[in-house]
Length: 249
Image (cartoon, rainbow, N blue to C red; front, side, top):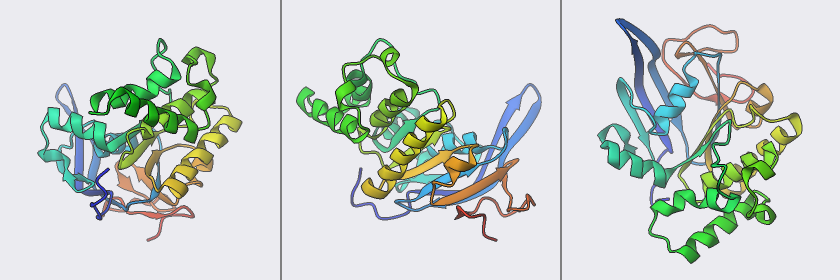
């Protein structure tokens, strides 16, 4: 992480995203505006098809907008080539997925080490980073276990260790508790809160679970690509950030 960078973690300006199916144009995001400060923990909610995962993917550099700007840690993603964008993601973004996305033939240690293979760190340095990551998520004693030997909650903790091992600017989480039982979900949410409060990690989390959203510092609602308030009335100015108690007008 570039410690000299002092601006907002994420700035989204007048963002549009359209998908194309045959001769149809399907608008998903329509003039979205969003700013996420460093150290924020933002929950993004909305019904299926509202555009929340699309927005998350654009912020993470996994997709490109139809038009508009996405600036993360001061970098305008639209100005990066595909190869430069891939390098940028590996250095700046930590991904946490609903289904963990662990490689079954690799141990927990090896899964967490994967992002570091793209860095100039030597083997000893990589091992130190991996052990630190697994200690933070409470799985230092499971580093030689394979995913099939772990519970769902433990697999997600390995995935979180993998996400933080590179000290990313931003953690993006897409339904991180969606495949977990209630107890494991609470443990994962406790861990995310700790990463935010203790380690200062900026987090943007997509969730449909109001209990998960309550753990975030701020909340954004999406309805068909635009902001809606607590009464579900669409607003035409794009997305704004409110508190976890509700969207502020």
